[in-house]
Image 1 (cartoon, rainbow over the protein chains, first blue to last red):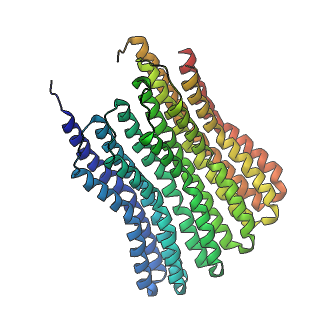
Image 2 (cartoon, each protein chain N blue to C red; image 1 turned 90 degrees about the horizontal axis):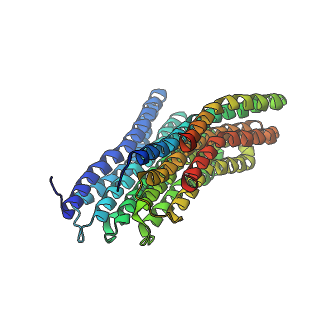
Image 3 (cartoon, rainbow over the protein chains, first blue to last red; image 1 turned 60 degrees about the horizontal axis):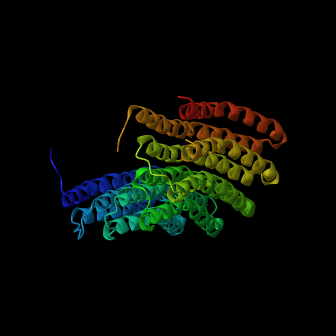
Length: 404
Length: 82
């Protein structure tokens, strides 16, 4: 049997991680830039006279979307040439975690930041005189979309450059930290693209509301960052908490479950919160006088959309902080991984569903503000029903943790 | 880590329960969201029928919920019966 020594494992992890980080990290930016260019083409066909402004804005927008992939490129190159002073299996896991964090974490930001660019080009075609204002709003909107990728890069750099010792439990903790941050950044990145795009459409439709629309966009996309921040909290706990003394079996599975739970559940809430924010920008542009009611409804809808991510965070905290009796049985470990899988996957659908409801509600509250009460009530009822499967998923998770 | 026959079956049942409920929750969540979105839109267009629309929304969502309940049943069977 071939034996591989520890420095070789670290080297393997670094090279594998370099490829993974760049491969995954290239997905989002390319899609986002394609979206921008597709809309720029439509804009050019509508208004060929403004081709100079449209192409300039397209290129600036694509450059911002590209930054997510550039972060991944930097992390990939660092991984390829990394010099590890104290090689250990924990360090090898940390390097794979770093690549997952950066690679997965760049997907959402790349996709999301393409949306403001595309919509800004469409806006310029409709109202060429607003080109400067639209480009500025696009830049603000797509810069916010980069936040999750930046959080993912911070975690990736920590995993690469901090020395973690050689506790075998750290292998699971560090790999899961990267997984949590990478997955958790996807939804927030995509989500914050919606308000950025709709605010650009809105400014072109209703130029006198441009300041209000940029403000509403910023509030909405800030709320979209919540799931990515939850994921970062879980990742930081996994990286820095001192878990020494906990039994390796089944605690390793608890860490993996914790990463999966928050990481996946954050995807739905991030996208859902973004759809809601996008709907409110659209509504405000149509009916500027309803801005107060629409922003309030947006915040209520977004808050409810965050629930699945909060469930995911809760299950992660239980998995990380509960003491589990030592057991080398495979079933004891798989119960904890299963708990993470149930809550993580189970949170995706309700998060998106809640966002759809709230998006539609805010759009129609703007159009028919005197019946806002009816719509908010129906929105809350529909969101509660849509939430039910996330609650089932949490129940199954808790049964897996506490009962079986 | 010692792995025995009974243990591996239980391990598969636990992981399977997580997968069944987790994946099974995606569809109803999105589907019920679509129903709710259209109901809000419909009330916006025709607020006089808010009661009827909300009632119809709930019936539609209850049907969409059924696959989530199947998933829950299968997950609980995997956990406690099989």
